Structures are given as structure tokens and as C-alpha cells.
Image (tube, rainbow, N blue to C red; front, side, top):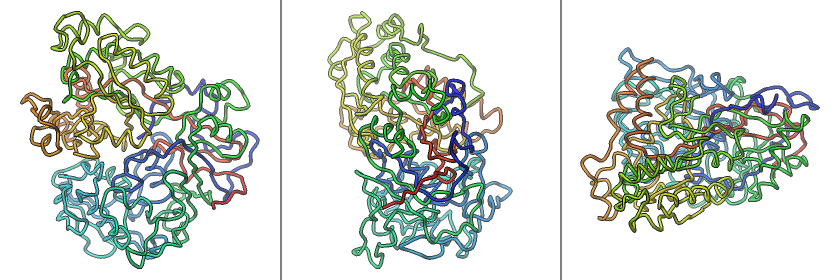
Length: 615
């Protein structure tokens, strides 16, 4: 998910905050019009199927516009945007005294949109969980529910498999029975994969990502053409016309959505539609915004020359929005593959990387603060300030410290501070084929070469880069494409990256394979050369479970200690940027808001004044 700490509000002027006031020269909020935007590629991790999709930009489209969950958010910025509110449910549920049973009642009058056009029932919510529990559908954050809800294991053979820990006494009641008290369970129910799914459509898709072209809406907007789909049988189903993963995604109002079942604080729904086009030319996207052909950006970073215009021109400053999206960008290293199976090599990499140059590649401090550990300050504000286990002058890398660490490694038999053996040559590094990665990658290559590590760069589109490192048996040694933003407002949502449950043969998120076992390596097809997992191969599961069970100050300090353990005794990453989220809007935008949950613009609270239609 996307983006982190807003450090430069002053630099961005009035546009640096999330505000509901219109830009200068425009009228107030206007009901109607279409938010027209573009992006270089969607980058979806599971083809937009909500059961498996794990991209923050998709979360915003789901929870703001398309899908309603039992509980959700008001989709605004800051702490107010992290507060849980009822959505499909009448309230925040009833919890048993022992914290093991949660009961919810659905609001009356909530319906699925076309082509289903019927009331949503508790069984539709249950079906969403049964999809999460189905192994073949690869629910990429199913670990939030596996072992937490009784009967959820993530390895069911089909979505028809019952879950013992979820019951539906009647069509409007759903009850969850937990295996242990889980203090953040309500947060887990805000995730889009838990939104109700109609089995009559979704049953037609039995592999990961298949449902993405036919997602049925429960929210205020639906995919264009949903009303033209024939759902009489699986054979009759055709992809909705408004979504072509290589060209566009177009949303229009859902005729079955009833605003009376929703809260205007959560969703104002000013827009008549959302039109997202694929444009591989980033400069072209922002030129079209300035020309009034697009209403604003979405998930694209403005090119440096355009960004500078908005930072320095008083007339443009209010149109640049800078928001805290709670994200860390990092370089991941695979603990299974040489030479990164040696902690001294991993420490040397942390010492040598020129983070200042990586920040510059992103566009400078306006894009975020240089990261010195895993958790962004906005996610774990109790972290000691100034903590930096790999310091260097100007954050430009420390060659002497890196050489000293490398000399302690088994891969430096000459003890000359260089990775001397064949395992250090021609190492595959995965990254993205777009800026800022294409600017950043040569810096990483040059830095690693200083300590004898020779990487062969493979730059891929966003989606392919993620699916490549998410497949265990590909054994990607090092990758620069990944970033992580909180899934919800709790530090546990970063800790899941380091649990063994985050290792899946496909769709994994634990790219460093922390907690890997020999049995799991064999199950995932890891070659015998690499599946001899040592008995002391690090596992943080019990440590993370202890933190999750704690509360208050003890809980926060536990997360701080975990972060320090990761940075000094495990060292899976080189965290380099706690990033801000920059959005540029056009003068047609009459109300702006940011969604703290997704880390992107708030589709349900922004307004535009144009005569555009979706077609």
C-alpha cells in the first residue's frame, strides 16, 4: 500500500494539507461530472479481484467507491480517517466479554448492483470469507484471518467449504467466533476482501484474479457496462466493458445504491463517474492536467520539472497536495540466496547504499524523509527519534563501514572488503521499468559494485515485478520494486511482512523468507541447493505474536523492539524512504480530500466541475 510521512507542508504551501476547500478560482462542491485521470499502469497484484488484490490504489477504489464492508472509515485524512465507523452493519458489533465472539446485523435496504440487483445478505459476507479461505484463490492478506477466525486455515479446496467460526443465524446476522482475543479484529473487517460477494457470479471464477473483470458493486459506483452483463450462467458471463486492464477502468453510478443506507460523512459521492486511462507517458499525464483534459493525478509522481512549477509558482501551489500515506520504500534481500544468506553481507548493503541519492531520484525531500528503520514515524510515533543503525555522512553511504562488515562475511575470503566469490557476480535484481526506479537503479548498482556485488538488473512493469518476487521458487536475491504501507491503523500491519505466514508459494509478502522451513521450501519447489534451511534460520513469529497480544504502552514498546531486532539481528531490508503522497489536481476540482486508509485521493469526497461523461 502507499505512501508515508508529510514533512514538507511548508514547502507545498496551502496545497500541502488535505482540505475540503476548493482551489482558488473555483466554485464550491458540485454534484456531477467525472474525475478524469490517468496512470502509467494499474499494477494490480491480483488482476483487481478483491479476494487477492493487495494494492493500495485498488483499496481506495474498492472501499471509497465500489465495495462496502461491515465496518469501514469516513475516508478522510489524518487520525479522523483511521477511526472505524459502521458501514454495512448497523453498529460496530457486539463483542462477548471474553473477546472471542463478534455479532453484526446488516442494515436493511442494501443491495448488490447490476447484474445481480438483489439485497445483500449475511451469507454474501460469509461467501467472501470462504473465498479468502480457498487456497486456489490466493488471498494475499488471508493471514489476517487464518488461525484468528476458527476454521480459517487458508487451504480450503473451494469457496463452498464451510467455516466453523462464522455463522449466519438469519439473512441479516453474521457471527464470528475467534480462536483467541484479537484487539484489532474490527480493523481486519475493514479490508476489501471481506466485502460481500455474490456467489452466483464469483463461483464462475476458480483461479486467482479471475473475478477482477466482473466485480459486482455494493457501493455507490460500479464498473461501466455491469448492467449489460448476463449472469444467467457462467457461460453467458462476459467481462464488464468498463475495465480493460491494459487500457482503462471506468466507473459510473450504481443504480441500486441507496444513500439512505450510508453516511454522508463516509461517502458524499459528488462524482457521476471515474475515468482512469492508461498512459505510459508520465509527462503527458501532467501536461493534460494543466491543459484541463484531465482533472488530476491519481497514483503517479509528477516529473521533476513539473513538480518544481507547482512548488515555486504561487498560482499553482494550492493545486499540489502532499499527504501522509504511512509507507516505507525499501530494498529487499532474500535470506535463502547467496550472498544475502550472510547477515554481514546484508549489513554491508545497508551501510553502502546512498540513500540521499535515492531520495533525489524520487524528487528530493518533498517526496519524503530518508528512512533509517522499518516503521514510518506516523505508524509508530513512539519510536526513539534519531535511531539509525547504519549512519553515514549526509546519508550518502559509508564505504568504510560496509567494507568492515564484508570482511566478516564468508563471501570475502580475501578479507579485502569485497564480495570475492562467484556467488557475488551476475546476481539478479528486480525493479520497475518506470521512474523513479529507472533513475534509482543505477545508483544501487554502482553502490553494490563498491563492495564487490555485481547485479544484473531486470526492470519490469509494476504488476509483473510484484508477482515475480511473490513467487518463492523464483528465488529473487534482491529487489528494489517493493514498498509497504499500513493496511490499517496498527503497527501489526507492518509486522506481518516478517511472519512465516507471509510466505506463500505464490502471492507471498515475506520476500526475505524470514521463518522459512525446509518443509515449506520443498513444498514451494525451492531447489535442493537452497532448501537446506538451517535450524537457526530466523523466525520472528513468537516475537510478533507477543506484541499482537499486548496493549497500550507495552504493545508500542514491543513493536519498537521488533523494529530494532529487524534492523540489527535479522536485516532483511534496506529501508530508504518514508514517502509522502503527492497529488496534482486541476482547477476543475472544487473539493479535495485524502483517504488515510488507502493512502490516495478520496473518491467519495472529491468534487469536480465539468461536463464530462463516462463512455
